[in-house]
Length: 96
Image 1 (tube, helix red, strand yellow):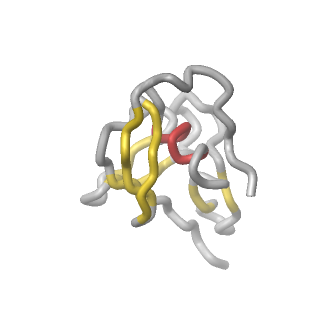
Image 2 (tube, helix red, strand yellow):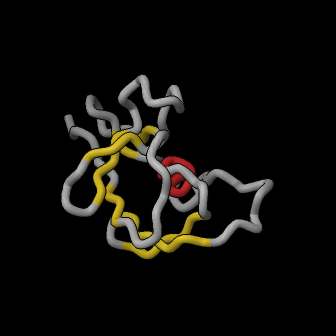
Image 3 (cartoon, helix red, strand yellow):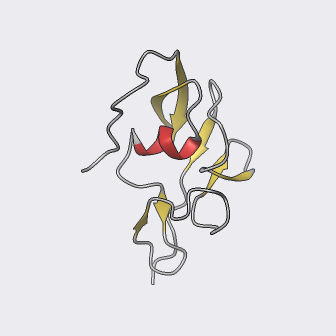
């Protein structure tokens, strides 16, 4: 499994969150994309094949980084900031 490795800015305050029912931690100022990819090897499954996806454009234009927050609200992980105690659910994609 390959995770994003944080090389700088490691002294920011930590924020706990839940990822697919498991405790996780990110840093203040992280986007959901960064927070998830420092904890897991992919962001979501493809809508077409369920293959792992990790975002694409990183600026909210390509629709490749949708995740669900607790309560079912879908947000773009690349442009949504992590908040303490968020519940984040990755979409597994479609099995063919």
